[in-house]
Length: 214
Length: 174
Image 1 (tube, one colour):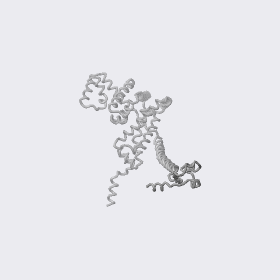
Image 2 (cartoon, chains in turn purple, blue):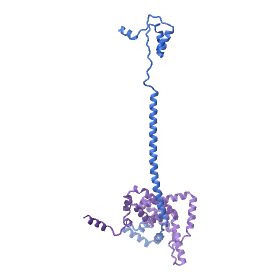
Image 3 (cartoon, helix red, strand yellow):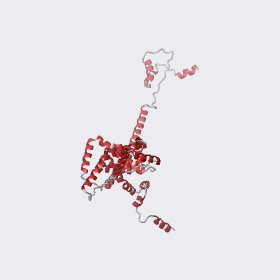
Image 4 (cartoon, helix red, strand yellow):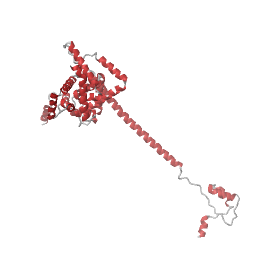
């Protein structure tokens, strides 16, 4: 009888499914529960899921890649330390983005107070231009490549020109695909404010980019 | 629909969250207003451009750095827990020492105000009316005895002064 039960239990498990594969199949809430239940590999799964998304969000918000990586790591350190206090009835994604948004905001605030830090950031970004572009296609004609690089820079500069509170909402909606309600929770604003800021951000961005799109 | 209303609803229009009838009104306005139509096209193209920005990937040493920071965080948390416990223990020892010292101090104060010291006996002397008051040393001795003069000095002058015990006199008075 026991042998039959054991056979059935083995058959119930997907063939060759490792712990990581099982974690990958779970939703965020289940992964969080697994981690809090003692499965350390569950935290690595959360990092895998969110590291790129958070990196892009913070990078587009503050414009400094190296600093953005530091801040993403800081997000995960805080998640690690405080996950036991996280309200599991809420979305993990919203919580992680809230931490990221606050860290990005603090970074921008610190920069605006410290001209030396601002200068060093600008200088470093100039040097970053020497690195190969990620979407450069070596088979393209030279003038096409120039146009793409030029356009990419224009788009990035246009986003950077948006006021901070507009930029935040704009990136969360247009790049990260967050709903208005999620954005309201992440930025600690009401729904009306989110919609108003998003509308203005879209209009401002279009106005800046429009001459280069002709 | 006028241009102002169109602009107010444009966010929901682009995000396709308008109810059917409002959607139709917006589309009607676009066919009638070249300015709003141009603005709508510009916004949609710019959003398409922005959404197609290449996504950046974490650098190759990202995981290594993160692991190091998590390790440091674990050590820091363990140290903070230990320090917290040590501080609480130290505070408890300090408080109990202070209480002990306070108790000892109070106990010493009680010893300073003696409760059990026995005063020397005072000899009460009643002066007989028959005896002429002496202005000599006997009277001075009588005055001095209640103040604590030793008995033997009183006894020296006792035979000079007749002694009447107050209790005998009060008994005979009854």
